[in-house]
Image (tube, rainbow, N blue to C red; front, side, top):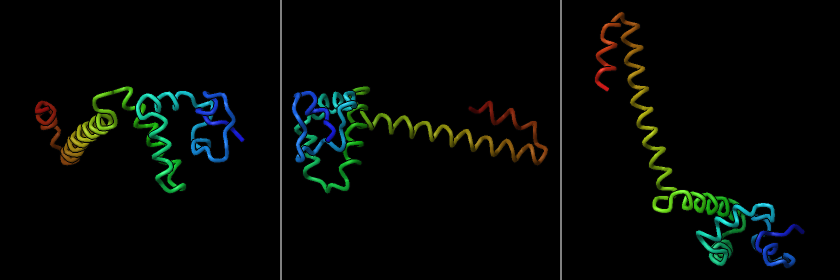
Length: 121
């Protein structure tokens, strides 16, 4: 049986009841450090015990992602990531709309209006 991070830290053997063994391997110490810092292992174990075993892997993955995001940006965490991505999507949508308009003008021989669209931005 492979050791989980907690049992390795405590220098004890993982038991069959260890809920973290399938999700936090001993060689994933950076995941462990993030989880401990943000959520504490006691809370992670509590959460894992409360959910269906089929959802635990996804839960640990989500908790690790959230913990890493919180460490990188303590104020906004994953909300900051979502906000930046949405802002980038809006910017790309505007760029795409402009490109479509320019393409339509070029197809119709209205190349002189190209400068007007770019100057508005």
